[in-house]
Image 1 (cartoon, helix red, strand yellow):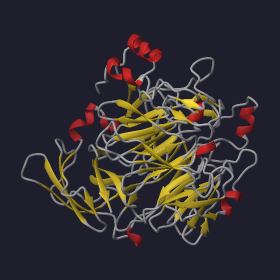
Image 2 (cartoon, rainbow, N blue to C red; image 1 turned 30 degrees about the vertical axis):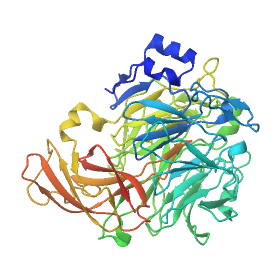
Image 3 (tube, one colour; image 1 turned 180 degrees about the vertical axis):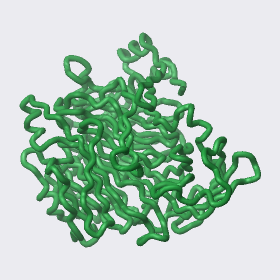
Image 4 (cartoon, one colour; image 1 turned 45 degrees about the horizontal axis):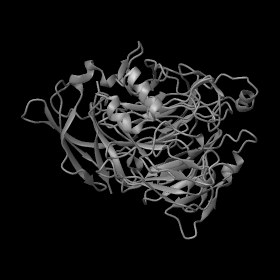
Length: 572
């Protein structure tokens, strides 16, 4: 169990009322394990803000922020530092923080200063490891903000660049591209996209597809699902439709079949989506096996208007899976164990998909969700149809509108946020503003799996290029099914006994993890070393920047779905 700093060590971060509460209640972490598998751990009773946006960085720090027009937060800025903003709709002068950097190792947050409104914004990590955060609301809708990780935990802060965007970007989606640029797609009443870095002056490019998928008044095409495919084109899903876009020419190369049911999946009928792990193989066309996208949950058509009128319709319980590399792809529909709206979907280090947070009825929006979905669900892509979902242990904390989750290098999932209220509201509402921070440990972190968990002991280069041979040494106390000879060969269609996987760090907000990507590296050879419990594998790095855009990744050795602790690597 992680040691949590004492209340005394947090005193400089907290207003007096919160400090008193901390002293009365204590700041110990606690663990909660239910019957479904996995374990929940309360890391902090309060981080002072509601974690509406979250990004893990390659120095094991996590950036979190909400919005500047909530009013006073419960996290004070350092003495003498205040935000003075005559354009703010809540506070013209605010000496509390609305952003922080969280140190995973010490469980300590530090306040950051953000000047313009980050409400419902987007982001991506550039190849150099800097977080590039774009848009927002009011005075922040054309702003680009950059956070550069630094070795001194006390020094780094936001740098903001006004009017750096060609259009106001509110509820837009970002994705890193093979050339290192970031594409910014859509936003409220923005049927176009642009790039960062951009031209001077900034330029935008029309995308009529976004207007075609725009419902009035519900919209249902905000925060479109955007995935970069290994062929260098973009898969874009909005409302119920999806396309393959050549973003360079602006041409739509193909339109995929509409997802069955005609129920919307994007904000405010908020479902979620992942690009399933990309398995690299020189034996397959294009160097990859089948490329698939998974879309789960959402709200039934018309749910937004009904929720405003006080009727909270049951959320969608279906997932659609589309094999994009098929000549004539068709959606394969599956049913989750429970309906879900506003859930986050995260690729875990072992390649499984975690579905977490959200509600079982209603829709996204202020106080429009009901019946919290407290039990995470794990989806196993390689299992037979009908056997892919497993229900995990419930969290005691509802995580509804404006909740977030990210995967950490140690394999845990950091979970925060939930504020379905117009302001910070801690009483007199159905679901108060949530300041607590949790971690969910999937079953692969259980004590029973400890001996079968690999540990990387040697990786010659933390930085490497494309089409390179990488040799990794790892320790494994208990091999579950070791056979002499070529033990790296496939034992079923989807997985190998030992795999090396690279997982990108994601920018998560509003139930979509932008830039999420896992590549499973092609195995060349493997061997047992003379030292007890020591092994060596050689793999090939990704063949192109379209398969894995340049930047930082968490690298894991996975043995029979049990991942090692991750280490940061950089491909360029």
